[in-house]
Image (cartoon, rainbow, N blue to C red; front, side, top):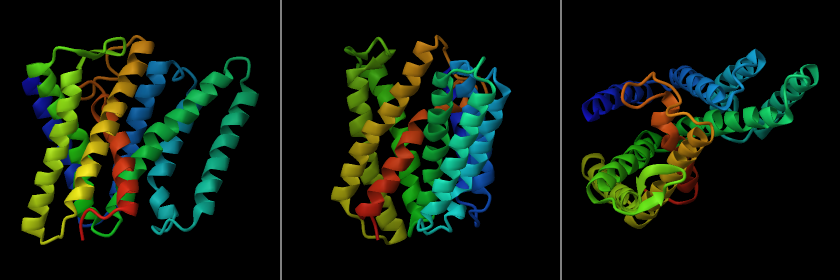
Length: 275
């Protein structure tokens, strides 16, 4: 099982890096639209709203629209009216669906659909927002490191040292030792990655800010992972899908990434980690 997980993750990472570090960023919205669409369909299926075709269409529409949000904002983040217009149109359409199909659709389902769109599509868009920042091609490495290294260190720390359950009612296999190992491991990895960027890229690294960012990513990555686990437990499913052998669905593998991307983006907006 571990071998299958590693091979599957390696293939996914190769595809993502090929997209993210391509000479042009124009290909990213296409990839992000596909990724977000799969994740939204998985989540809608898990929580039981996929039975409404109108929600599925809205979910895919949202995935595509938000994936192109950085371009609609003209890459400067100044034209907030466009984002506000998108939000208004989206909510208006949801309420139109609610009014037309109120006999079969509940307000709770409308709320689930809205939150799911923000949770997946909006969080995911921060990867491209980060890529478009000064030195974004380097900073984006910390998004993926923050998510995947936290998961990796937590997994092996828990497997080797885990004795005390972290939150058995949400995820029985997660341990306190694993959580601490993930937090410390990703922080150390950030410092090592920063040193490599300094040596091979001639960047000046602010190691204090980088250490703080590593700790924050270690926390938010695990919040993302536990949030996805809680959804699965409440809806009594093992995985969101089976598109990735050994991992489950798209959302199963990238749940922590969705939380880490905004963490890195907003942190580097206010604090320099390299220059």
